[in-house]
Amino acid sequence: MRRVMLAVLALMLIAATGYPVVRPGAVLRFPADHGAHPAYRTEWWYVTGKVKAKDGRDLGFQITFFRTTPKAGNTNPSRFAPRQILFAHAALSDPKVGHLLHAERAARSGFGLAQARVGDTDIALRDWRIRRLPDGRFTTTVATRDFSLSLILRPTQPPLPQGQGGYSRKGPRPEQASYYYSMPHLAVTGQLVRDGKALEVTGQAWLDREWSSDYLGGQAVGWDWTGLNLDDGAALMAFRIRGADGKAVWSGGSLRRADGRVTRFAPGDVRFDSFRQWKSPRTGATYPVGQLLTVRLPEGVRRWRLDPLFDDQELDARRGGQPVYWEGAVKTQGGSGYLELTGYADRLRM
Image (cartoon, rainbow, N blue to C red):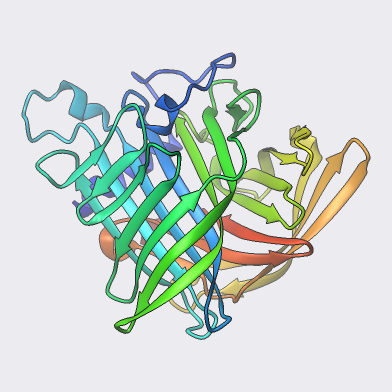
């Protein structure tokens, strides 16, 4: 399974063949687009959030489900062929621990191991699950060696289509794109179990949904991404796709203000500048964990300083044949959210 997962992840860095092409003009349709799109090569349901326990501690969490369609699985007649592969990450950021607590799962679909429903959100990977209830709320449960989470995510705002109505460019060529929408300001309630003790938690989360056949062009090595729930009800997403020289191949994002007005960012409107770096003692990777995000808005330039809840929020999933990246809770003026940094670890060591 380790070699299978590495091969699947490597596919994200080469041009796609035999998969549907992401094109502008598509219309997002709900609840169908909450569900799986198995014809496309890869997609994810990506939840990040900040919660507070009754003892007053601020904690970050990540629960992510990925689905991939290996090309070979579509032509192999064997019922054991991996037509869909699912993998998932769960992580908890606790400043008192000082490093990320995380676990991962991976399995091919079927055989009672994993499934991703078409038509609405319902993804199961052994004992981990995320699904959407008839009333629109999402529920998710994960259990790891270090912690368990059982959460309800209640939408307080409508979905936010990214890019042009959900068509989000990721590179110079128009097919280097994804269908992408976000659900910011999800109200979180639920339970965290640590060391056999249950804690009630409340907070806010962000759900990203993307599916694509050619997410990264051949020159891209990784990306920086942030999603911020701002205290006034606004929501900010920004990203840059990086080349091997560290420069942006493409950038984008959006700001939805508290009154609902949306500004879409063109590549020249977004800039990430690192003001502090952290080197992992495990992988040797150096991550720009302190970032100054600058965006150009119609009314002028605005900046948000992104400070990590703590530095060591590296998710090292090599043990399960999965990637190494930094995914951390961050604080900013007037809000909080998550910062994701991929492609900084030596890929030969993944």
